[in-house]
Every structure is written in structure tokens, then in C-alpha cells.
Length: 341
Image (cartoon, rainbow, N blue to C red; front, side, top):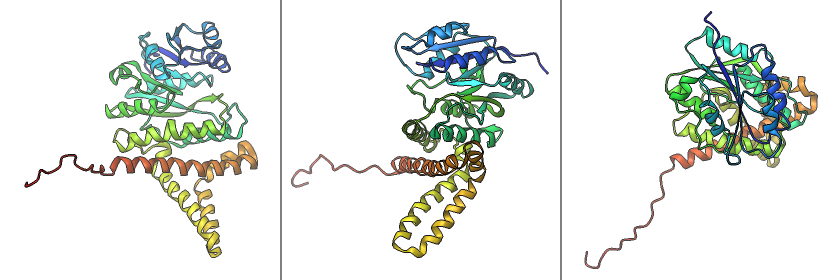
């Protein structure tokens, strides 16, 4: 196996005082310690920067407040000449062997341009919305194809020369959104190979609330990702956009329509119940995970949240498709014919 690579770990942070110490501690105490640890403090008003000073090789303090993690990662990446840039979110606590697993991936498969890991199945928060969201993320990354069509910056790595070649993160994303998916799409368009390494795991320490989850899913993920897909910038055939997921999305809409129909025609109730059973069966592996990690309450709540997820994600995609492909509405001419013409 070739000699080890130089790793620079980059952590963008904004008011991350509640989680960043656990994040940075897990990084410096990993079995494969990074060669450089760079924290970009995005104008925090709490003690984020002071905590970072105790762990990081370099702490970059943003001049203005909250420009977004895309800019922070790009600025930090410009401060190192390491072989590989590893991005870790400030609310993520990596497993001790996670860096080692990513490094081995690059060493064993030198054609790989980027690689990313997975959340573990033991999220920090016991809030129902947080459990559901984090376990959903874990499930998709544990069951996705090894050669991915996207990238994840929560815990992902990319060779520095490839990062520079594709222009880094898109700084038009001023808040956490799909800047990592956008980066992955550009890597793939440049024929770069991205690998999903599910055994390289990290714990998510974020405490999702239901409103925050819905806002993030719809406006920060589904909407911009749908726009990327219909514009041809993203392949859209991996993880939670696979053909199976699209079939389940259609079934989710059939369920509410049959449910309403059964209120008028009770004979249709059998079809409604059968549809629910089929929906649960198609998602049985994920729902089994929910039951193991949170019992009946998480299972039932998770089924409802997951059904809603399919509804709003597919609805957003449908709306984007309609607005993208619909012919423009002709405006009446402001030029009037002159008499006699």
C-alpha cells in the first residue's frame, strides 16, 4: 500500500459552542490524527472561536457574520497544501477509526477523487424528529451504492487538486443547503469517482425540531436539488432519489387520494388499508431500524413523518418540473396596428 496521505480537516462553524468541543476532541483523538486541523469561525457570537483555539492548528475568524459554510470551507482549503481535504460539520463527532477508513479508501483505490462516510445509528438527540431525521440519513448511506453520484460534506473527503479543479464549493449557497450535492455533481461531470464508505461513521449531535426538519427538507434540500435535477446538473439516481424511492413517492400520493375516496365510498377502505400495508412493506428495513432504536412510538411517528417526507419532497419536484417545462405565457403585444395596414 502507498505511504499515508497528508490530511487537512476543515470544520466550518457558526455559534457551535454546544457541539464543537465534542467535534474537535473526536478529531484530534482519532486513531489517525489529522496533519492539519483548520476551523473557520463564521462570525460566531458565542465561544466557538475560543474553544477552537484549544484544538485547531489554525482558526480563521470571518470578518463579517455568517457568510455560510461553503465560503468557510473554500477559505480554509486555500490555507493548506494537504493531499486530501476532509470536511467535518461542527455538530458531528467522528468515530475513532473514521479517518483511517477514509484514508485507506484513497490508498487502496487511487482513482477515487472523493469519499464520504455515514452517520451512525445512535444519534445524540432522543427527540422524535431528530431520531427520525438522523436515522433516515444513516439508513440511506448504509444502503446506498458504493460508487456514488453525490457528495456529503457533513463528513466527506476530496483530493485537494480535484477540489481546486472543479472550483470548490458554490458560494451562491449562503446557508447550509445542497452545496455538497452541487460539488459532487461537478466532480462527476469531470469524470471523478466518488465512493460511499458506510463503515466510516460519525455521530450527529444536532437536536432537530419538527419545524426545522420540515424547513430544511423542503427549502434547503428538496427545492434546490429538484432544480438541479431538472436542469440536468445532477444525475438524481442515487441514495434517496433512486427508482425505488420514486415508486414509493407515487404510492404515498395514491394513499391520501384513496383515503379521501374511502370517506365517500367505504368499500374503498380495503384498498386504503392494503396500500398502507404495501407502503410499510416497501420501507420495512428502515422501519425495522426505527423500531429497534425507539420502539413503537418512534416506529409509528416515523411512518407518519416518512409518509409526509415522500409527499412534500415529490410535490416540490413536481412543481419545479411544471415551472421548468411549462411553455412561457405569451404576453399581448403592445404594438397596435395602424389604421389601413
